[in-house]
Image (cartoon, rainbow, N blue to C red; front, side):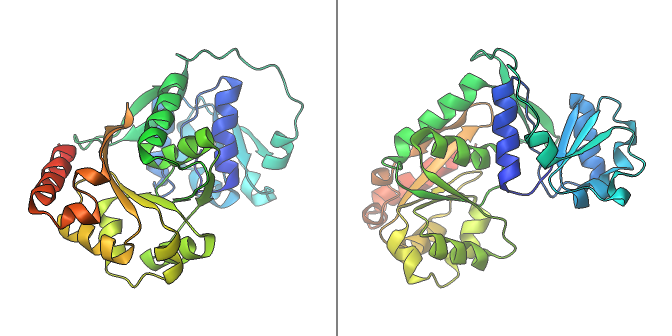
Length: 294
């Protein structure tokens, strides 16, 4: 799946898993050569993308011999489909095709492959089973507490394990997810205010930018928690975020792509506003986040 965050992306991922196929969400900012490399590496047979993205991919995917079907989210124009060596179909036709029994799925079967740089600097595919995905959703839902009636703001890419877990966690507890494609940090706050977002997960660079902005009253009123992943949250940034949203609980998370967010520093152990007022808890907050970084 090579798309920005949109409904078709979600349907394609979960539909693939239900059918017994393996889905691979690609980062929408990848260049055509990177997309082609990943697809060759995995022997991808079906590509779900938009006509605009497909136009830029046709030349790079010329030697992806395993690819036999391209599903376009919008109607393909003659220029878009021209010269395609494989079948090009519209999303509507693909979606409305007669259903079939599909493949029998076991919990240990592969559900997804997520590509990550990790700490080595080279892209590698991490294989996740259906059990992996469900266990990760249950883990995050258990420590975020009472999120069944929340609105999660999905700001991270769905190709990122923490980004995709916004979907799995929300679906596990029947919560609402707002798919957000943003250009500026201000867009995140605007969306949070408009949608009355109650939870958001992001990475330190975004939080640093958000902490420097004026937060709308609607965000301060409705936000219940903010979770950090992908690196150490500096105490200075955490303090500023507390000032922006005093009612929100911070969860400093750590995990591997293979295991999702399997551990976190609870708010009462140093991440809460009260904890930040005590030097001992503040030190534990920093040391806990530093351990997460390693």
